[in-house]
Structures are given as structure tokens and as C-alpha cells.
Image (cartoon, rainbow, N blue to C red; front, top):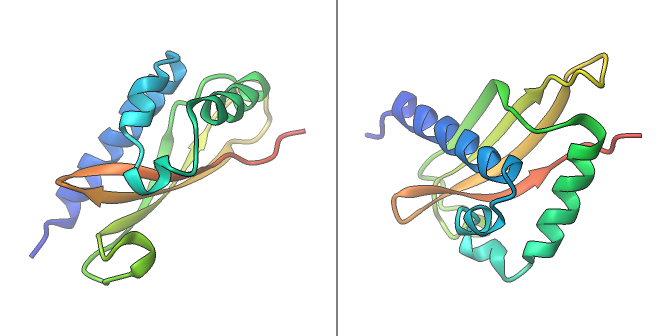
Amino acid sequence: MKNKDSLKASLQARVKEYHDAMNNGDWEKCLAMTSPTKLHKTTKHRYQISYLDFMGACGSVEPQNFLISLVLDQNHLLYERRDYAYVHYERVSPKRDKPIKIKEVWMEWEGTWMCTTTRFPQLS
């Protein structure tokens, strides 16, 4: 049986590492932490544009107040029958009155967590 607390802790650390790389403009590291199933659908340029637009509106992303929902042993075809997780967290920004909610999906890939989707909210 898989230790859910351990999986959540490793995933939370991986999410922070991923956003540290983005905050530092290390796009190659970000892409290396992106699921191979996603890489054929995206480019470094698309990551940069999306992330830089978001950072321009609210500053860097420093995940806080995590809510991680693990989906284990479900054989879901969308994630190639791998374990995956929904990750929700907040970003407190000095430019905003309320925390910004960010949603991601991560999947297990060869013993590590890989990002498949990051949804930044539309900011106006």
C-alpha cells in the first residue's frame, strides 16, 4: 500500500521546485519537469508567455495553502493508467486583495511527479 502522506509531501516539494524554476526563468528545468505526454502539446515559448503574463499581473508564484487530492490505482486512460493528483494552492500577492487560486494536475512518471497542467486564473 502506498503511503499517502509521503506521496503528498514529495508532490508538494516538487510543485515548489517547479515554480522556483519558473520564477527564476529556468524554462529548460520546467520542461524537464513536465510530463512527456504534455510535451508534444506545448513549447517553451508557450510556457514563458503564459507564466510571464501571470507574473506581470501578480508577481512570482510562491505556492501556499496546499490541497492535494491523490488519485491512486485507478487505471485512468487520460493519465496512461498512472497515479495522478489534483493540486490546488493559493498565491498571496501584494498586488491583489484576495489570494489567487491556482490549479494543477500532476502525474507519476517513472518514480517522480511530472506536471501535466497548470491553470492560472484570468486576471484583469
